[in-house]
Length: 513
Image (tube, rainbow, N blue to C red; front, top):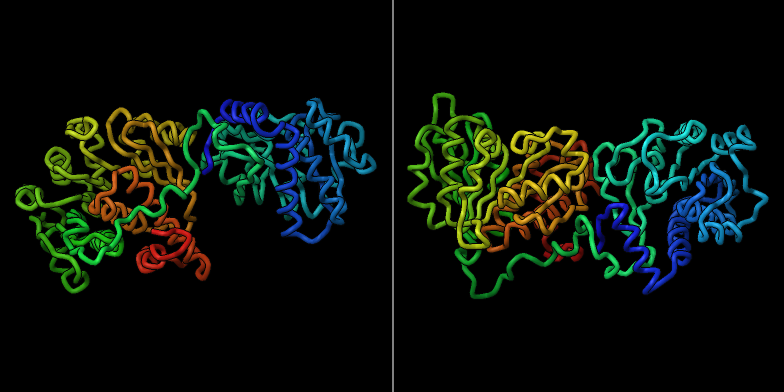
């Protein structure tokens, strides 16, 4: 299990580890050894420039430089702020061959040339210690480093604030970032993620019990093994009845994607409720579900009093999904509010369901019930949708995605799945948060969100809690994209491809669903 932490939480965990398990020096040696091992495994010996600050991040760099030199790399260590100032860093500096150590303030031209000619540049300047602006001499060196083919940041790219993700534009642009021990919450800011390249978690020996406080879980392990077992005596009703209220004549694909994803994800019975013309158009396309035709407007969107058609079957359902492709209209608002107030089962609200209630978001608070004071609700906004319902700007959301999701979830009593790179899922109390580690830019395509809604809705219908369903759904959705990327270019992957590979996701030994 991995955690997401603030700087203060990371320091507290390190201190506890030092007092109970292994010393700061051993943690530093483990960190440097892990990064060096990765470099050695993936690169032939070459010229490597290791840029080191005067703190503990520089100490990690000294370990890396020593181990690379032992394996035949031509290593040049550049000290950007003089010799180390912490005990641990001085200890590991003492083990280094000083013939290949250079000080930027004394030999600026030479140090710059080393960086400009290196095949590999390792950034160990600030780690979690940066805030504000980069000193000019360091910014110039990092700018030179950003032209090199392999750029490795240790823990955090220098020039990036690890608590907020805010950064100096002259910061280090890594091709890969080796995050030590726990994920730093500021790196979840999309702007910071762009600077990290590939994120590689590294274990440095801190026991999980040292994390007395953390922001979230950064791991997919707890999302595995959650689907109900298919026993010999089970029947279709055993695995839930899902009502999917989705689609319109203009957005019929959303109904198809969400319904097929739900069926592929194990729901026993699925009813698609859609405008009548959409139902007519899809009867030859969708054959494993039933249909409930709804009244419609002249342009094929859901019409007035659609709730009257839904009311007779709503009590029979074990989950309801609403919003995919419905269109943002007054009729959608009325229907969504009806479901919120009347469904006696878990619901998931997506897309136009979310948009339609943005001006009356307090309706979510009317969904009271027996379980923990709330009936079970999942909302799945992307950042723009979340901005509409939360009143936060996009910048405020992205600066603290975890905090924004937790606060909204706690205020409105809903499970929040905030989409984006590293999707954030908060339970309805704002107490438990997971950040999904699977997926890629292959999911940045129309229909992908509809597939995710279908997956989560199916899990809700089968009895998973909203938090379990949202976390596991995001995990499986991302796993599907990761599997496809092994054989397909991300740009060519379609939402239907995600659905088609779900059976492999659910049987793969690494997902164990």
